[in-house]
Amino acid sequence: MDSVLQTMVNEQIGPGDRAKAFVQQFCESTACTSAVAFRTYPDCLQSALKLMGAAEGMRVAVSPLSPGIYRDVIESTGAKLVYVDIDRENGCPSEAQVIQSEADILLLYNNKATMPAKYNEQTTFPERCDYGSVKVIEDISESIGSHVKDDSLAGCLGQIVICAFEEDSVVSAAGGAVMAVRGDYVNALRGKRPSKYLRMPDMNAALGSVQLSNLEENSVKRREILKLYQQSLAKTRHKQFGLNLLDFSSNGGYFAVQLDSKPDESIKFAQKHDVPVKMAFEDCLIKDFDGDPFEAFPVAASYFYRTVEFPLYPFLKSSEIDNIAKVIAHLP
Image 1 (cartoon, rainbow, N blue to C red):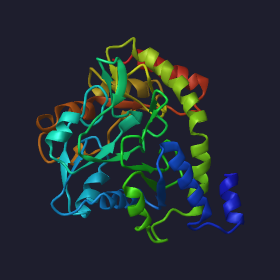
Image 2: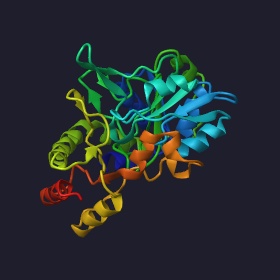
Image 3: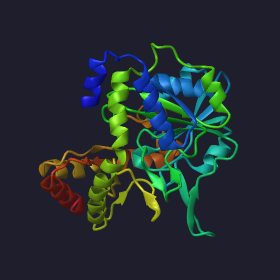
Image 4: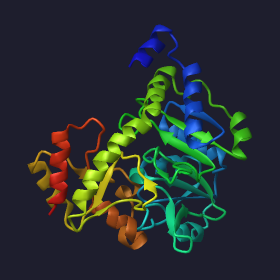
């Protein structure tokens, strides 16, 4: 808050130097070359799609577990939304299905801190997913700070990387989003800077900058809690959502569990012990899907209907953490 108050004292609350410093900080954390911060997440999404050439007649592939806002934004560009099912091992779009979809662009949302990585049986090392010639916009709103080994950070796959900084995001600026680019899109971005009415104000950037600086410190605390939750879950028949490789390090922002039972039973059980549990994918694209999701994308559908999320914050009290862990260990 000191940073935000200083911005107000300096009367620099609109788009300015703080926002420029924030996007530079984001570029460094994602190994991108250039970036711009937007006031709203939908503006950021739309700008990323347009920068990549989304237009009438083009196909944009998405996971059914992506945010519901994706539908409106993709349709606003004139492009066609194409669903691809997810890989059961990492929770991200299936490589084979993305290629088979004949999509021009993949709008890749990394749900619940997971990443598009896989285990290579020949080399015995994890590696990035390969979506062939499909252009990738990688949305790391929930995965920022996650990484596989030390060289593959969330955002390493996309030619364009976007991240929301909403109130409930892993890193918050109380609203807004950033679009960062690399490669051929650097010059294109420089020629299409948004107007001041679309850019993130310095007040938001000041808050986001401090939180981004503290991301790793907070992630260490979250990972300690996450490890306790995972140990408790190992005592049950249920499974954690997302990537589960030895070389994978989650940002610790989420703990989502695919249940081998009815979610209502587990939610009621948790509430009985004062643990707030919710469905993990309440606002995803499946919610308003016009058709049979189990026929269209069976893996994603099974996660949508069976996955719940437990509280995981760096400032949870020890007593609260212990109570949540006990509830996880005894899930019906």
